[in-house]
Image 1 (cartoon, helix red, strand yellow):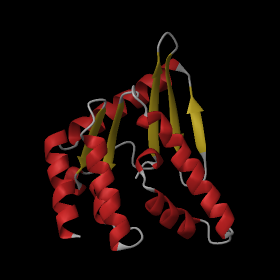
Image 2: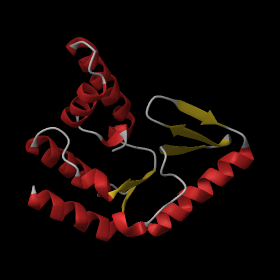
Image 3: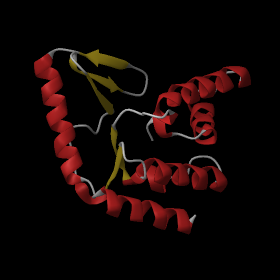
Length: 163
């Protein structure tokens, strides 16, 4: 689940598990930082954001059942925004070139595009145009393999109802 779409309780469950030696204050601070980064999408004119999440992300319980219900509801709310596109990549879609981490592609008016790739413990900013275009193409292929926004929303709703 991308950090920009996580609820506080979902982020807490992930961070608490992922940082077993961190103090409670450190985990709470990281959750607060993650929630602060989401402010940009809560404004009157949020940027466009397209996200593809793996089906496993909506099926795997993180935290309590209540945490997952709230997270799935938050995903549906995100999907309803006109500036958002949320797609689910089904488990049977097979192998793809972005399986080993997450990818963010940022387009800035007059600046071109940059990419940010992230693994479990590291991240990289990529600004070389040829590499960014190759990553953008990989994202386009991934998006084409994912469910439509309507089918994605139905899958999330079904999982929400089952939880």
